[in-house]
Image (tube, rainbow, N blue to C red; front, side, top):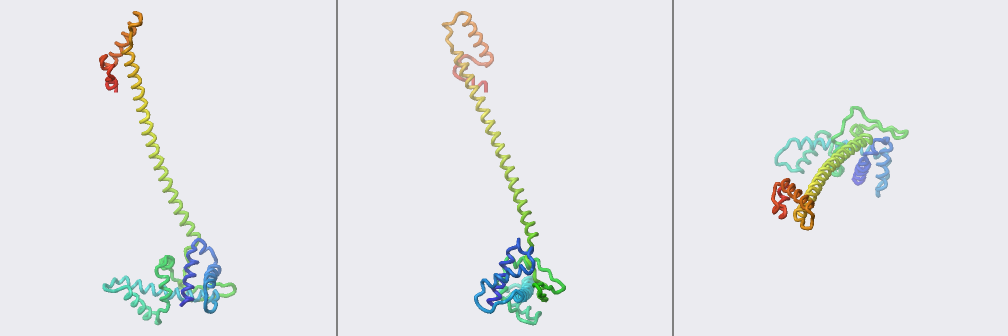
Amino acid sequence: MVDDNLLVEAWLYVSMDAVQGNQQKNKVYWKRICDYFHERKTLGANRNQTSLMNRWSTIQLAVNKFCGFLAQIEKRSQSGLTEQDKICQARQMFVDIQKSPFNFEHSWLILRFHPKWLAHLDNIKLKKKPVVINLGDEKVPHKAFEEIERPIGGKAENEKRKSKEKIKLFEEACEQDKEMFFLKQEEVRLRERELRLRKKTLRLEEEREIKEFMLLDISQLDEDGKEYVRRRKKAILQGCGTSVDDVISGDILLSRE
């Protein structure tokens, strides 16, 4: 049981390396699993790569079938059944159909909810002929290898990753465009506000100059100068459409807004 659990752990660990996974030859892929297994193994006899492959294929085939039986029972939606009741029924179905007990529940408990195992179940494809695995000069046929499935290959994983990156870049570009749009809108609002303030400042300055001109003391001017000031004041009053008192009091500003 300990060796089985360690082998399951090794398969999951190597399978998680999806980018490297399928681009390796089968021999290299299983060598990594074998190395992981022996680096962490503390008791018992050493098992060679061929032995581990055969053992894994036996575990995988049995667990595949048990998962299938359990899925059938869960689809029945029988009321009143607990999770443990469904597992017991799946065990019995395994015995009835396979004519042997399910001896790998310890492995199933490790694999059951692991993302890689769930992906394996989703992608499993049964083959009609046994797979022949090449190990150097050896050839190991095993019917159980019919259902062995490798993780998603590096090329597919890279394409999937690139697609996600393109989508992310597109979304980021859209966000940047949106930010630029709002920044430009804010810039336009600030410029309009600045323009209004400038106009108001110029108008106030003009009103101040008019008021000072209207209050100008002409007693020290000669007749020509006095006449010029009188005509300018008259023109200002006519242009503003107001009185001298309004100009002096500042109401001229309101009348020109």
